[in-house]
Length: 345
Image (cartoon, rainbow, N blue to C red; front, top):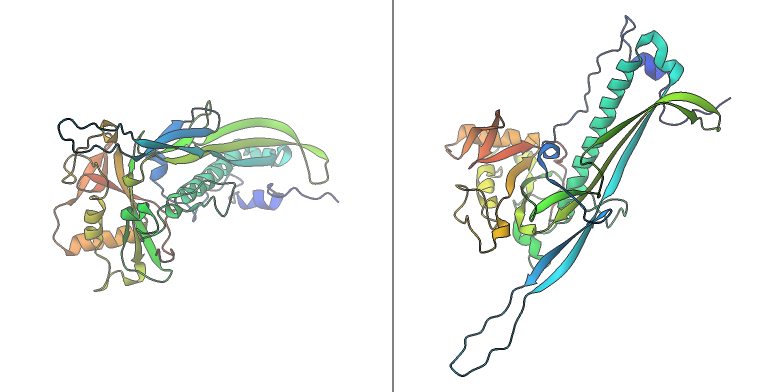
C-alpha cells in the first residue's frame, strides 16, 4: 500500500471542504488575523544578492576650545558597518489532479486553499517581525522584541527606548511605535526579487508520493523573502510589561500616558506630534510612524479614552479609512503581538 505524502489533501479533506449540494463550502476561518504592519512596512532591495549593508555613526568628531597661537589636532567621526540578511519563507500546495476534478470544483478548491496558505504565511511573517530570534534559530532573522529586550540602560543603549510599565509574570503585552524610513527602519528583500508574498501557479505537474511513485497534481508555490534592517534604533519604541490581567481595574496601566511617553523617544517625529521636530542630520527626516498593539490592548485603550478626558486621541482619515490616531500617528492592530510576554528586565 502506498504511503501518502504528508501535507497533501486526501478525499476526506476534500469532502470536508464541500457543502451538501456538492459545491465548495464557505470556509469560516476562526484563525484569521489582522496585522496592519504587513501593508505599510517599507521594503528596500538589497545591494548585493541576499545581504543589505548600511553604516552607522558610532562617535562624532571631538572639537576643542582653542586659544590664539595654539594648534588643533584633526579629529574624525567613527563608523561601523552593519549587515542584514534575508530569509525565505516558502509553502507548497499540492492537489491530486483526479481529486481536483470531482464535482467540477477545481478552481474554487484551489483558490480557497491558496487563500488559507497565504494567510498562514502572512501570520508567520508578522509574528517573526516581532518575536523571531536568530540566536536560537539560525534560519531566521531577529525580530523587534529580541532587540528591544531589556530595560537596563547599563546593559544596552537600546534600553533607552524601552519603557517599563511595571507588569510582572507572563501575562504582559507591549505597544510599539515604529518609524519606517529609508534611513531609519525598514524590511529588506533580495536583489532582483519582488517584494512581499509571491505566488507561482505551477499548473499540472508530475509529482511523487512518499514511495517515489509518480502521479499528477495541481501545484502552487508561495514564497516571501524578507529581512529586517534597523539603521537607527531610536526610531522604534517599545512599551513593555503591560499586565493585561489588570485591565479595567484601578491599577491598570495608563495607556494614553504610555503613548505620550513613547512619542518623546524618537529624535524626530511628524509635525505637531512632539516638541522636537528637527535635527541637525537631514537624513533623519521623512519617517512614517505608526503604533502597533493587539486588540486586547486596543480595547483597553478605547475604554480609557471613553472614561477619561482627552483631546489627543481622535479618529482621523488615512487613505480614506477612519483610523484611531494619537497626535496624528495612526494606531494599528497587530494580532501577531501576544498577551503572554514574560517580563522584560
